[in-house]
Image 1: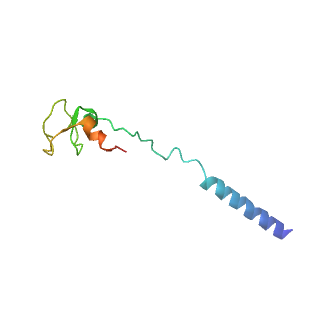
Image 2: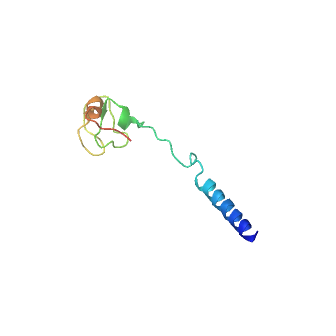
Length: 83
């Protein structure tokens, strides 16, 4: 009878630990969008380095790093993704 109680207690402990460790971690995971928001990602012309607020509606250079702004469609066309 003592072995039965020990085995039953061990099974309960293992089951409890399994349930707790396998819980759904949805609250801990962050949901990220595949497309970034902000002027540096959504403007007609963007900096290849995506410097903060570097996007523009006309050609030019990035105010932050000095790189030439590229047309957003061309920038995305070469397989560049924001993940």
